[in-house]
Image (cartoon, helix red, strand yellow):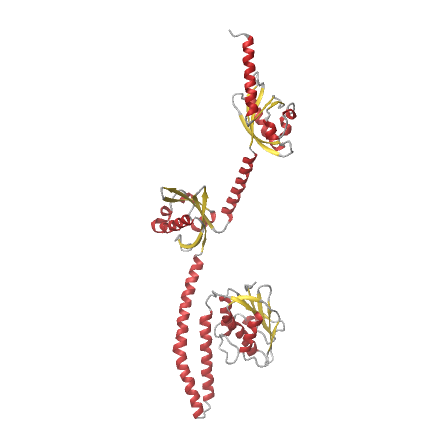
Length: 476
């Protein structure tokens, strides 16, 4: 049997060893009684929370816990008291000595039966940085979910698995917009390769672009054909790699259904091809015999007198005017691809000088600079000026100026255009002027729309006609 001196010595050494341990480890050790009063706190509290141990001993720990976390803290204490064999871990905010709040993760153990501790032992650590990181991740995840759920463009996520030079792509997730536009769901594609989902041919095309993005190591953009259905066939896609460490682990794709645009472009190309063919026929097959007829009529007028010659010459000249306007109409409707800065004053001056304006006057109210095709726009303003002079008095005044922030107007003080006739004036062949070809305003509308602008007609300031061109791109 050991004597009491030996037993007391062992207890003292054990207590010294335990005290040394809790004083040296990084975690904060605290002992509290069943009422929550702190009876011991290790020196680590100074490093973790800025207090001297004596500032906390004798105080209830609840005093330093954030009000919103006290109930959770009390429930953990109650649980560890009710079931002494099971520890409880709780995360609470604890007031730092500087007044700020620090997140603490505390593991509680019931040591009331331990004569050395005689209380609830808490092992705590500062997890503020971890909580801030988790909060950032949570906010990022919420933003990510909001983006996936609300963006109109279709988004898809692809996992990238690289092994021994081989790369495998598997769909991970589709946005709700992607699912709506294609009828394909995340559940149907998750964990499957593009070939599994779309077949060997289309899947191979998709994977080729995915390989290209991985090889480039940066975002790429491309148009692809993915025959989901008749309404969703052509897509404009931007693909971006996600790098984890030094390896690409995921691709994020944002794609837009451009089937309607592609079909329109195809139709436009076909239409332009037909117009070019038509213009070629007009230019070569009609102009040559017309020139012969005009030359012979002029010679006949020199050699003989006839009341039929003047009407004949006027008719031939009218045919020539129709041919010229038809060629212009056929060639000017193409979409504008190249533009340059244009001064409104310079353009108007050049156009006014080429039109037979008689006693008409021009009033340029504003100066502005905008982007456009100057050669085609000369047809616009020349036709508008010619229209004003032909339909107005000989001394008509034409006014040109800025309309709003992105527009130009051309108006006159002539008779104007009745409201019920304003749409008709842009139709091919419509003309109320004697000798007019009826193509002038049609040409104007085609060229304006080829620029991506809008054209409308309304009443002028002085009762005449006012043509307004809007959505013009400023030259800066």
